[in-house]
Image 1 (tube, one colour):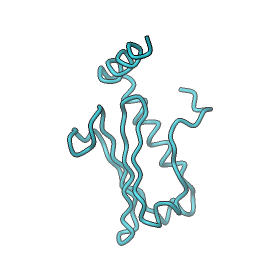
Image 2 (tube, one colour; image 1 turned 45 degrees about the vertical axis):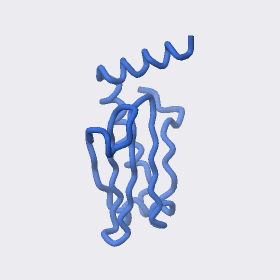
Image 3 (cartoon, one colour; image 1 turned 90 degrees about the vertical axis):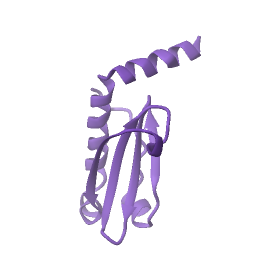
Amino acid sequence: MDYSVKDFYVPTITYFTSENKLTGSRNGMNYKFTPDKKEGTLLLQVWYGEFNLEHSELVDQTTFIMETLEKEGMGAVEQWLYQQYDRYASTAQAAAYLKKQKKREV
């Protein structure tokens, strides 16, 4: 997959060390970043569909160490999101979402 265009908005680590959460989506794949300053971690969660996480099934999650992200940047986070999107793109849910979007455009 070509990632020459940045498809996900991923702020700098400072955004998360300030204890800000972030949610986003791309073509029906949703993600949430939840920092835990006390533990020094950043939890990333992914789910599919039109509803929020509390009303959906969690598909995958991972935790990053914020100290590592401060030193190495947010590239690992973006890479994980791209891997999750590649996985999502091959699902029936993704096909249904894109089909629904095309109908809306007509």
